Length: 325
Image: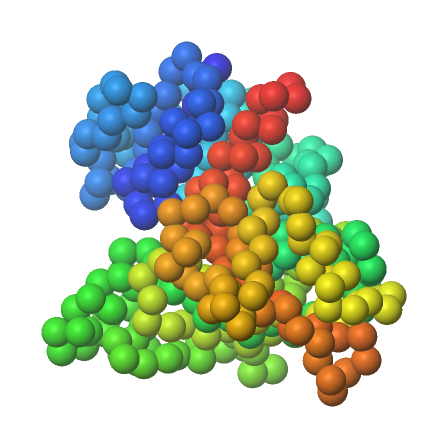
């Protein structure tokens, strides 16, 4: 099997390499791609050293079986179809393909690709952890409405976001964000649209419906950047379709391998980014009834945005394709 990793030198790309090793993805040949600026770098995978190559149109025809990409929307728009035309299955981490009708948007714990095309999209990082938390509730009780309030770490913006936080602590002006992120909170992720929502908020709304396969869901969101290096937190306010009590909601999360229930606030037990960073699971806690809305609950959800929110989910998709080929 011939595998390519596009964007291999980036924050997510390097984690993809770690996940390829962790999930023991078998390959006979591996090629690492980057922009011209990063080409020539050396990276180690499974004990072997690889020289990163510049991605060009000609190289997309080199007979790849699978390609995993994390190199931005414009790169994915141009190169994913070229890899596809050459016979590869492409798993893309950018936002470009997610809402195309003929493109599968996949979280392996929830859904599987239908292969209308051989391009598979990885969802938004905050969406992934949120739908993983929602799925047990959706399957058990049904869901009518969801409101998200996110607390998203700077690593979601790549190296630039991390730099803004670290250098901002030294008094430097931001270069990635519109305002300083050090000692601050920014209620803007991506650009504002005409209706006052940001593109990030619309992503969460639309992707939730697509992944759960339910356009009738009422979903809204407010997405906020916070001065945390790693792991996103999401406050989910969810209205269930069937009556439930708090303990029944907690029970829905028990004994699910990819979810860790941490919910005993009286003893200081609830998830934070500290617990979730570098962990593969999604953490949930602070489950309580919302007294202002019928059959509505609060669920606090935390996950490592670079792992499950990006690199891990991408490689899990790859592994599921290889295992079920």
